[in-house]
Length: 496
Image 1 (cartoon, helix red, strand yellow):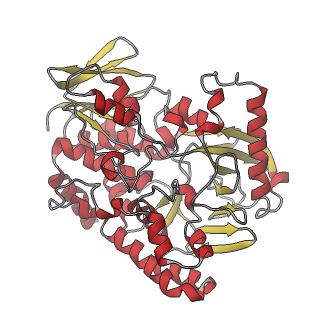
Image 2: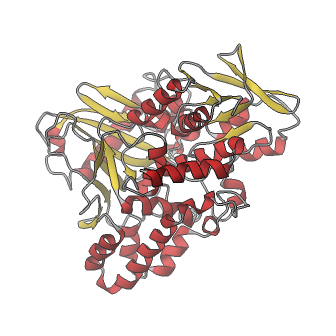
Image 3: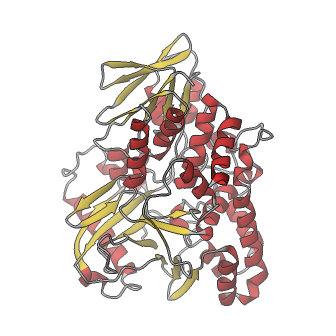
């Protein structure tokens, strides 16, 4: 296919769109304002330790599973993926009680039923429901889906209402929701589809990546270049240009003009709309609606470099919750939940090199320091981060004896880091908050009112590797058509 496309942002969604469109013969230019590609998949090194920014593990990468099918198309299955412990890929700890999540739907149900025999039927129904949702993920590629990819009825049902209606035991409801840091669990708003699809993919199989998430985006960027495309860093898009009622290209770094037939934006929709020149094609009511969309919470992260030989690598995640914590109604200022995630050792030993502690953090907790430059936010900000680190450490060391003594160095980040480094409004970890009560306005489609300007990324349908990869397909389908693209993706998997 002839034509040119400019892609704003080099996160997973932007690079996947670039890959698809370059593969279909378009002239692709990816523009990234940072000095490295990757968005939330960026990595950084401190001493001998490598840390991920936002990626910690992936679900559904086993043969024939949804993310495997997509990543095989993108040439990403040759990366050094490491299968997490199928007997317990996630451990949910509530107070002093520990519950293992086993890989595979049958095994998952059997293990949990051993802890909740009185809820065995509900656990089986829950697991079967998740599996059914995951089994039909590619139904949205069907031409019968005339209302769009994100219009299914499960987007209009509440996740919390589904769980409360199925499971009577309140502890089991908390356990099933205990891996909540993969999404924002908001009892009043989270659509059932988001909850079900994300949880299902990890139950199918869970994986870490030796070398970090930047291997994914580096591979995609290299592929784009090999297909004749261009990936530019240190290039900030300062305006989206319009001509004759259609997108015409972009302005970069406040002056350089780049022309294109299409522009795909991988940045937040509100940030995208703010870049569009005044045009009759984009009405003020649309600008106000997009700008007013709510955002999910952010994250506090303590990246911990460990002393050599101090702790052994653990091939599972640990989700820790204080006794009495309500994972469906987390509160700002409270450290009730922490995810402990290990980085896969790259030196061939079973000694852990680093781990991350992650806990939800709201913009309201850090907003007073917004606008102050990095390194100059004052002693009260430093003390705030120390306090949060101590709260996370206190919760984590209950399950990991010796953690405090094993620490060599701790590096911290807050939603301010996401805002300044990734241009994520309010430091949001998962983009726009989807709401089952108003899916038509919160579950966005790729098309915008300005012809030729398309959206992609985690703020549209689903967040995470699976959701963003699906969205990239739908975004590109607006240019090259869904039928042929879907056939290309699904059939290439059948040939392997």
